[in-house]
Image (cartoon, rainbow, N blue to C red; front, side):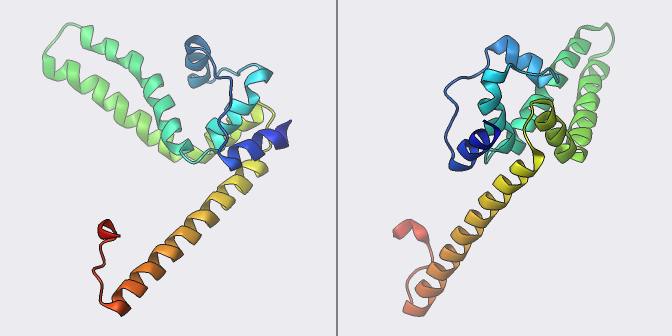
Length: 152
């Protein structure tokens, strides 16, 4: 099942079942999800936009700090506190990006090596696309055509 989950994520197949909002909030704060959501977890942690989703979970973890706005005091202080917490959250989240993903994958019984294979395949596809775009630009330069792809 683990290989099928990663194969689905590599193929870009979205999981049919998603966690409900309560499960997702628990997942964002580090709680595990049931086995029937393992394919969704594999897609979430290995899909093409996993970094974006990681920072989305970080923002979910940061959101309770907005309660600091309710504290008495000058507005500058009340606005600065959540902002400083946000900067700290984003810094730590970016610093431990790959370690956090590896931990979440292990927690859900998915091999981290499979995620690295999915990343390598996605990067190889991106390299092929970049090479094709570069070749199109070179061909356009040889024929004297405009280099803008909007006209094609």
